[in-house]
Length: 425
Image (cartoon, rainbow, N blue to C red):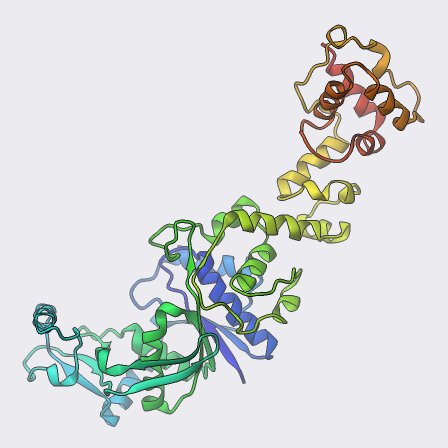
């Protein structure tokens, strides 16, 4: 069975770059009736608040996982596989201290050689606890990347990775590989900054268990400052964007199609999964909040009244009239109040003497008033344009929105009279 995974480190909130990887991995598994695993890379430290936040973000984004794994709970599994590696002779003990490794790097740098640690650099055993390294040969690792095409990395220029520290703890390089082997992960999507790690892991997969994985490396997503999105840069998190009112489907649409040559506005994950292919630009992409807002508007305006009711949890029968004015839930709440509450919504005043108009103009005594004739009479006034502008402000408290005839025909006449009379200077 096809199996993908998303492996966040619970040391901060998820940003868009994280979610982009999670989204593609999830949709890829959905599209192929596969399995999707959420794995917490929590071997260094565990921060419960971020574990809860990551779960909340994924649930809100409608990214559903079939299994959840914590690396901190799997030491027995890693120990078992490390012993297998020792029996195979593919790992070796190394006794160098941090200071000695720094000296080696400095020496190699002076000799104009790459600062790479290989088995032949290892010193003789002493009475200290060793760390363990996975031995990499000086060969080229090549693979056909699902997104970037053919990639080749020479392991000659890569240090033998540490798989277990001298204190007995395991490193990401071993735990990640073992988890993917144990869970039979078949496809891994990640950022292109992990290409070298991928080459190492492809070799480790083969040597440890003859396990095959297909990789896809996404182009880096940049923040508005042109830097790679990261927790360190304090880029806007999914939590931030959710609190601002952005919809999950807006972000899902943007993250899947950003860097693609096509765009299809999708309302559900099932629909979106049809476009979860590997056709991405190879260039780095800068995320734009302005573009996200445009897409939010486009998504909201695509909703029918019933869909808007389900999405916002607000039933409003004037939806078709005002949906072009809606970006966030608060906007809809505001417009619903404008049409249904009798409250005054503006401080705008009309001075009849100043504008040279009859005070009786706002006396709506008949329920069947012809609003077209009413508007025509306003426009014929000496200051008709000014009055029309003031009327819009009085009725809605806004500069833009439905046409004046639409407002007059759809707002209850009692509300109209109340607001107009309150505006008389």
